Length: 301
Image (cartoon, rainbow, N blue to C red; front, side):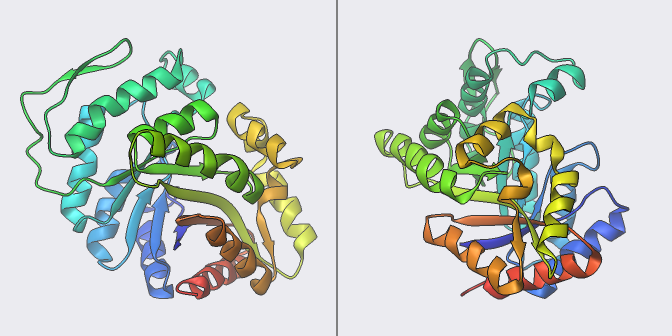
């Protein structure tokens, strides 16, 4: 299991670059960025990758609706060219309230949107021409994109059965967020593995993203998690996974405890089939530092 950390992008650019450099120096294997309402994740990773040649890079995730797949393919391949092929491209639908309210786009039939999006994106990443016309997406390129770079692995943010089937049949795997280990083991992995097997595809990659806090005060840290991650307890896709886990809210699936307790819980994720762990450290500066050091200590163990 590759050990990664989600870095903050809502900071001055030089501070963001310093974060990634710090992760690389600590021994973290992958630096992950979300695409939110701040700096562009893929541009940030291209620069971070050039400045830090040893660390893997990932998006968790880039929303599909605001970027046509032809443009996203060009962006992803450019990052691959800039970084020597170290990108894992995580993509997702985002959420209805974001897509409709922020971007003014329709969120109608999201599963079909993702299927058609991948019909265009995947051939382009593989150096082929895109020629597809669907109900929600279409593209007819004049040929392959003129970017010499290897195709990145594509992980689809998939939680429900329909989306997991799409990810298993069409992409490299999935990247989850706020989904506990029981649900990963009993629902996510068997569902996507079955879909991939039926399609004759390789065993999928399983990315797991969770908040992490190494602390001597677990109760206080979980109260902090309940506060800063509260929104994820209300968004329907995450709420369904929390309910499946038997969790009241995000604080219950956060990985919180002493260094040894956190390390054991991360190793457990590897034992059930997780291929990429993306920790999101939170808490005080000293707790965040301890969390990163603890995750780095799990590398290779």
